[in-house]
Image (spheres, rainbow, N blue to C red):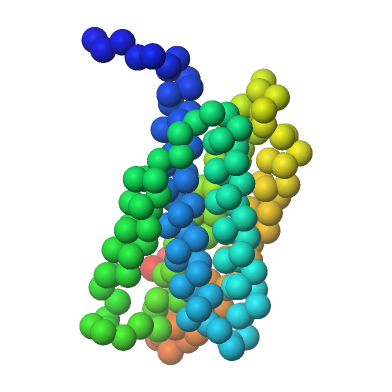
Length: 181
């Protein structure tokens, strides 16, 4: 068995935080793209604000990692950017153009990412209880913001989904009680 120079909890925290930094980088890229796609639209200001907050949150994560003396892996961040770009290659019913389904799927993905970010803040809150290098108040504020972001993304996703599926076959009273999806 190979001997490690760092204690196991610290090494695991570094891996965990590195993964979240990669996810934050991918999420930031996606949120910027979503905001660009909706410039001039009714949700433009809210989406632009979400993109700005995603950048602030990613930077806050970097600051916590630096305060804890954890490595900032540029390789993982690059993988996050690459992952976001690969995510654009989904089967959406369109070959070269953006599908109407894209908004619903991308907003749903962003909401799931924000939920993961909130879990990271919760984990850091637990670390902050024993490590004075982490500002508990700042983590609490970031967690509160993640809750707000999740609620907003959920609302925007519902609006997008309603637009996309508005023409779907209506449920008839006979089918409504059968529990079909």
